[in-house]
Length: 55
Image 1 (cartoon, rainbow, N blue to C red):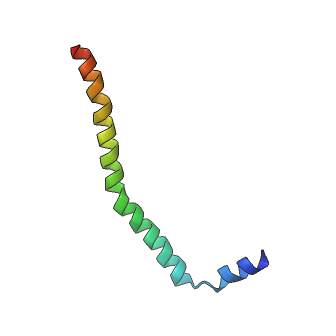
Image 2: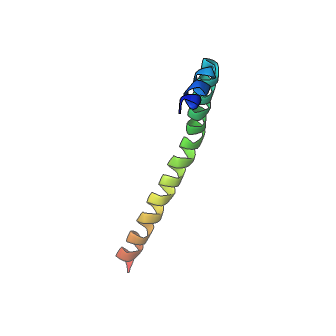
Image 3: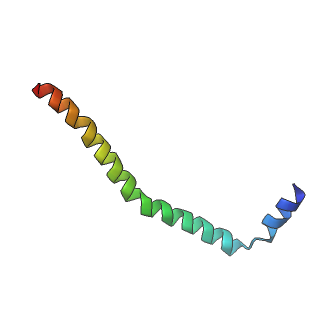
């Protein structure tokens, strides 16, 4: 356990900042896709209910 803590202490702060930035940018890149998938799911859920009302 002590060896893993020592390795973490050797990691420079800029590397941690870069990793955090990359994780944030990945989330920002995926955010529009998540919204698009959510909209598609909502539309797909609404279509059958309208179809049932017509029937």
